[in-house]
Image (cartoon, rainbow, N blue to C red):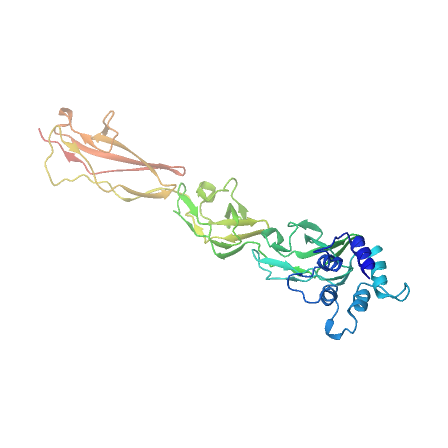
Length: 357
């Protein structure tokens, strides 16, 4: 038997351990020599047999390895013949992936069950037909795996060759962005006012793009693709929203902001006249000012001023205050307030106050 054990060891490419061919063979099959009390029994376990039902460990080792008594009716020589022409591994139970399907979780695969004593295993994770991951029995789901079919191909190898087996399929959860809290647009209602929007709240860690949209005209606002937009004449008397699009590797989704209502275009209209305090006495070198002069209009009117002496304009007196001079003595001084926007121009004039000598 010792010569046969040597031939088996030679065929397997192993040497003696502590002078024992059987120990070398057992170590080849994966038996823990430090704890084993029966090497033949443990070899049978490693090749898939059940010692509890076995009446002949050697015979059952040969049968598990796919051999028969074909040489002189001798099971040891049959084992030698198997190792001399050992076939490539054959899968008998497919690998199984386990783990949760949420993005970011770790999947793990078993090797499955094999005959013909594989000596090593390699792993290739796949997203559909695309290779992913590294040569490891675990894989962490990433955003690109969203809704994809994930498998693992386990390849068993021995001295005669390699054989692949594909695991069960799991489908990763969707990780495309989802808008959970809508964006919020804020700002004024007049042409020239600046609108801004928040991104809102999202799942899926997306990046964002923006498109301001005129609901009234049912069209995108040309060039309005940042998170802010200044209202122009074309936006007047319209309902305006911002469409915020979140994008990640799994896809895109759009969330609409609340509606901002812009005012119609309107020429300037005075709603509070300018007034110079006529309850006091004014002299030369006194600085006149006024209150009031409130206007409405869209766009917001631009205001300019012209101080007047009686019914004539005072040359160069176009500020919102005026310092009286000697030419104003015994004359009534007033201010003309002019309001201008893209829709027109209007003016009003204040009361006049008498300048004393």
